Image (cartoon, rainbow, N blue to C red):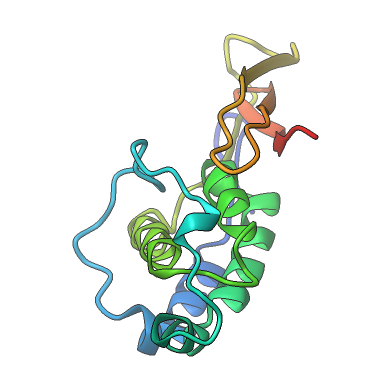
Length: 171
């Protein structure tokens, strides 16, 4: 947490991100070049990308710390990084049997984090919106590839900063 002049507050977890990426450096490799966004808009994750249990791909994927990284990134997404919440949520659906596609999306997300580790929540006490609370929501109809369920999301903002966010697959 950093308090700045003129009623500005920033909350970021730069040390946490750097420590996390360092801990898994052996598996993540070189995190260059950077990624400008957490997930490519054209990527559509699916159960079809999961390997057959017992196959060579499955055995290889079991050696990667997919589940551990997703758990650590969930904490980050819920605490100070709403920009990665959607990607982490999508990847978390495949922790029991991640495929190569899922691992590559996770690598892209780690590259994005490596180059945006100082990003976080930003609140400006002088923002034009003042103490007004703003809410935004969106939904997609039948966009889940596997279940054809819809997705919905919302963001709540005050003082120019995000205070609550959620993305959910509908039942």
